[in-house]
Image (cartoon, rainbow, N blue to C red; front, side, top):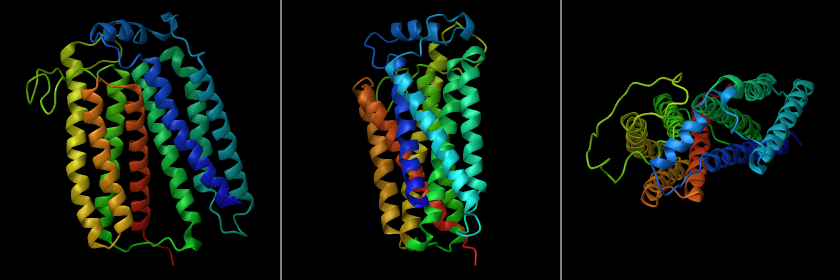
Length: 309
């Protein structure tokens, strides 16, 4: 019962993160054909002080459904926490991680209520994205811990443990950078592949302030945000290929091939989306594959974790 509950909650969390990306990206008017004119129009609206932004509307069916899924996740995490606390001795269930999940859901709920009155879109997007990833990672870890009786192997490899953790951190950073790109409407700031606006290192401006509400960012700042994400994706691709080779040395073929295929597919999706001027379906799929890669790396780190005797 407990295992099925955790599995179901994990699936709902994955769907919630992906659907949240869909709601956010569709609300941003992604795929507009007259960029950067559409960027200036959307950014001017989205970067206004929240209280002064009377046009910001979250009553669409996407946002309503997202709120319902969030409420369902809250109920499920409370149920998991209550079950683990009640049966902590009989089933040897640790309530610590489920209670952290409840705390995270409470924080995200309060933040979601208050944030739109005080914070700008980029900050809200990053906090929600980071919270969604943390929730998915914790649920995945909790699920894997419940599969110990199903012979999930734990590999004793201290060296690979460090590399696996570094890979997880790298993917988290790149995903957050991707959220920063979309929340600042910088997805089309770089034209062309592999060059950006005809140059390997285009004109950029690394200064950034979140309090310049109502003012669209300069093209140079947008280019910087996009270019950093693109460079991070390339570094991640190279590192994951190297990590794949290290994983294969330890005979973890399934997880190794899963990570390799996911990262190559993810990199290809990014290039595909840029070529087709960011179709909404392609970008949402880009977010979904990123979450699958995150889950695969959590499993790898779980397998590297030292087993308690």
